[in-house]
Image 1 (cartoon, rainbow, N blue to C red):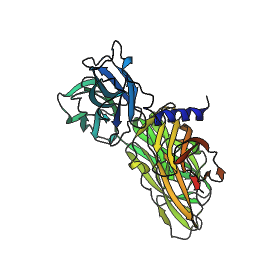
Image 2: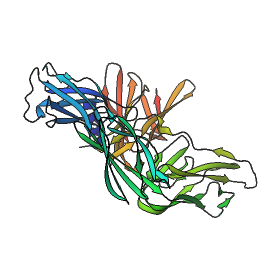
Image 3: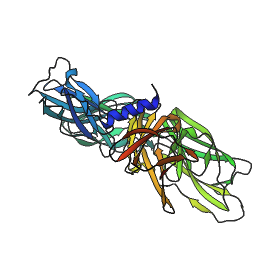
Image 4: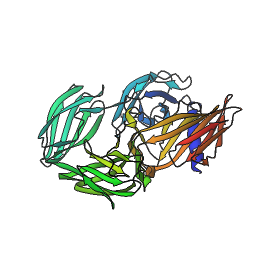
Length: 457
């Protein structure tokens, strides 16, 4: 089946998700938490007094779910029977509820609303790498229906089990660290058990370095000096006292050109980020080739590299006339993704961004692989040329372009008006999606994040 056609079927079911629901369905809403989206979380439905016998369904990107109670083994739905719903997403560590309702068979029945939350939340420390620290204090909170906490720690000192508390919701307790990797698995107990794993490193040292290579590149007073409008090879590296795993990040200014842009992630209004997964290494180095921007005199840029909570920022001065001392500073801009919710997705569970702009209804990002944690948002600008307004938007996402299979755009136009959408000089092909009494909706499938220009004539 054509990929775009599959997208449109999915969206039609999403938009009209309750129009086909029978009286055997029970439905509800799961609200987002402050940090996490409830999209694609698992909801389980079970009869009164039998939590081990259940059916399940997923929360869709509109925060709604509908489960068929006839799929509960050995359960015959009838008027007056009581059923329960709760969010129990073991893989993501999310819970919610439980809530209950009495079946009426008067159309589908609606549960009280639930809110998603992490069953186990490590409030502090937020750091995951420590230098010469033999013990730390952990602050852990549990969801309402989970009030017992144990943990295991697997490290160079061996595997050990610890009971933290009974009948608690928030606790601060010390944990001893061995050198190197300390894998801590928390287990919370309620009507069901759920776990959360973190890895904390206790190192003797962790050092970062960066260098630039080209004919005129040099280091002076801890600055890297590079020529304007030239290809520069940057070598970014770290060395540590013990093996370490994680995403090694390299942040560079967005007005520098990366030759292989498929691995690029959006970070801020000024910087992009490249990520390289490091597995059990104490030494690591990677090279990136970028073209420096054209400068009139000199400009100063900031490059940052880091791993978890440790990072190093270096100044790179781009020069055209090296004897002129003046330079303009380009610091690291604000993080794009302070406000958007943490989202997850997969090839069959797209990430959906809703728009408040009149001309754009929504954006659907289909990843090629399972994404457990991502941030995405939309950036809008508006320009006026005479009496005509032109609208621009860009898709910002922490998912690298190489991991995005397709992006579907749904546009909205008032009846009687003509819409044209461009990416650069290329005009997008708009297909009629649907229409109502006031608006016509168009779809377009793209492989890039923009910026896109919208003209309404």
